[in-house]
Length: 117
Length: 113
Picture (cartoon, rainbow over the protein chains, first blue to last red):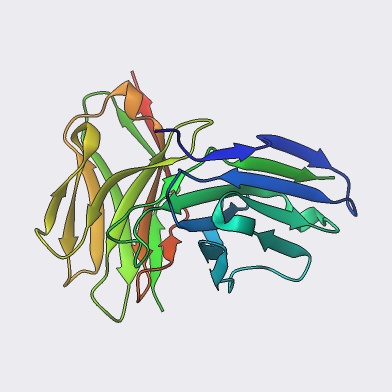
């Protein structure tokens, strides 16, 4: 099966610009997660979709971040306007089990490295 | 709230030596614990998981981890390091309800020839 794919792999933008990250989960995986890792620090949870619904968006830093998952397939994460502190690696992950992540481990994409200058 | 602490951001071992990566967790309920590995330019991959069955869990590539409730630890070990084990390793715990996974800051393993 195809894995989780993320696009782009790298993005360099200027402060104040907009960037949209895309994630295609493994086909059939209802759970989709966004995580972010700022350089050298822990991987932090951003939000969780179950199909097209936001199950938990408690990790979203502020209202400059908008995540969507129209139709319950791929997801996008838009940052508008980007700030310097938004730089980091954004990971997308998906899992199959609709009820919990401990029975169905996360499958990660390779991440998008975002640099805001 | 659950949390994970990984002791040591960098660990260096010689090829053939024991690998020990430390992880302590905090959880008010029985936790589900994981180790993930990230190789350069790749996403994270599951190494092993503990879900309240056997306390000694065996994973891929010869790694294993032991759940010790009294010490709130879930340390990762491998008897003999190989050059291909050089990567970053993340300990993780699920939250109550199991919908969210919390990660540690990661430990980068270096293997010297």
